Amino acid sequence: MTPILDIVCVAEGRNDINSHDIPDPGLTPRGEKQCAALRRNYPYTSQVKLIISSPLRRAIDTARAFSPTHSSYSGQTQILLLPELQETSARPSDTGSPLSTLKNEYGTHIDTSKLKSEEWYLKDFETDFFPSLAKVEERAREVRFFLRRRANKLKDGDRIVVVTHGAFAHFLVQDFAGLNVGQGSGVWPNMGFRSFEFVDLKGQDIEAQLREVRYERDPTPAYWLPVCEEQFIMQKSYAVDRLKRHEREARVAIAVKNE
Image (tube, rainbow, N blue to C red; front, side):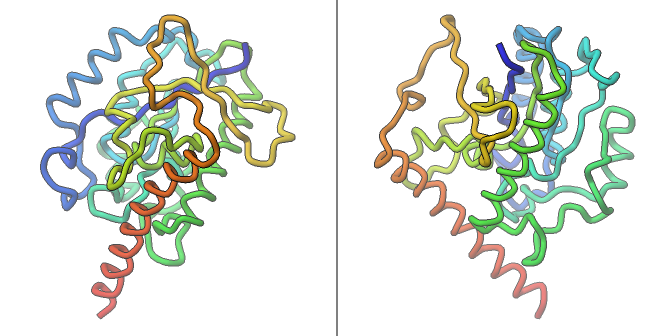
């Protein structure tokens, strides 16, 4: 068995029930209960060697459900914040907080070495995080490369927990099964996690593709079953259409800000 990635969708955030206009919201009480339940029931705690998270508050709060771990990999017990894992849109709820704010709130629980500036969260045209299809696909690819490099330092059966967001998760794993018109992430529920391994761990695959690891005890929802190429293209189109709406929103917001 190769190293395994447990890719987790964030627990319920205040944006899920209130408004996408809330800046970088935290979890709801229900989201906190979801974290507590996963902390009790997650079966691989002793195998986790690294926890990596989107730097958005609701993602960090979700990642803390897996910490502290029984980690021995380079003494890594902090949550590594990776900005490429943030959600796709530029709405306030999907835009992060300044670096100094995160350090003040989370202290030694987080490793901020990958956040390159105080305003790492900006999503203007010239940034890597502007919500265009090309940029989202590129940062999903960069995350897979990064994870493959880290996985190569681990032993068979070791696990990396990756906490991200529903819309971005589909681009990360290149699986859009179950999406419908107007739905960008509905089949990956809050606090749901799926396990993956690299198709080619040693690095010859230029896309660093992932394949899902299924276990006999796990149910297999119909939307996670293999699909033909025509179905894949159709399902991905729903995610792309949603992303295009987010791009239009971002362009309008930038134009208004620059007036």
